[in-house]
Length: 451
Image (tube, rainbow, N blue to C red; front, side, top):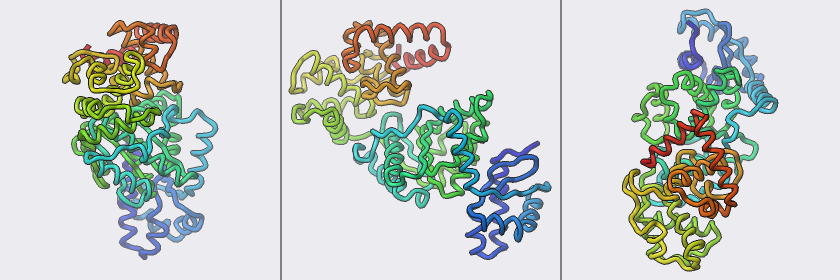
């Protein structure tokens, strides 16, 4: 049976370990250590090296020596061909330029930076680790593994790392990939819609790899093989990897031990539920970002929101959106009081479970969470296809569950005309009736809402 690329990578690691014990340290560090496996075809192992000098030396002076170790490790007569890293990267770049890009529609969000990430006791360690990694890519804490419950800011930190690195290294490649998108892209390759070897080349050309919600790779064995290969290639080439998850590495189910152990080999940090003071700071930051004056908001109003929605930052943002909508469009007041906050949330505390009263805000929060967006992106005017689709789903659910008037729905979504809302609701309704994938997604959101 043919060996997978991940098995070959492990074999090459063992070969390098024996080489290290047998050659001069400087020779090993300069010529052998930077090498990594690119692919295996027809019993020929293609090994990447960094310079013409290294390629020439390894292909002549040390070829028989390495082949003998490889034979001893595998009991198989392989050939070895050394190739330049620049050749691999050039091929990946050509694929990227001439074919439909991989992972289309997902990019580092320029709005998520360290500057607008509110730091508190719950996330200080994670923020500091993220900043260190962004400043010293590949040199410290590789990989960096950030875990937290949904809505606490781990994805914001992931984007902040990418933005900081891009700003200071404009010629380097940053690749942000949600794990479920990674799975979808691999499925496209299996269907023949793209080339999985080119996917690996595309990923391996990255200088910084950001993987979001890695738990979605669980029980996807073939996809895990591709990811494992890419992970080893980048790691062996001192490229920085940052991973987020909803749980600690050892608690991840459906992932192979060899992958989990690599996640644990760097630095693992946690983000916990923010305290009230941090939540108030987040609210004030969002208010200022909206172009409003925080002095027009009573402290007890912000304290109330913070106390009711402290377990999830996305829900906190949704509550603030409800308050802003109520104050501007219903109360028509420039000064926001505690009573305004109480009334905007229905005069009751935050629902303690999904089965309690559903509001426009809770639907917006749930849809935003499902599509990995912020509530403000959902209610804003950005027309990127992914955001527009999620916005239409939210409009549909608000109309379908709450029977909210089209005009009011439009007001919630940045003043959209009621005919626009009607069209969006009708479109999603048709998709729900005839598209099984859309129906499954909407039913899952309804289930989370307790509807």
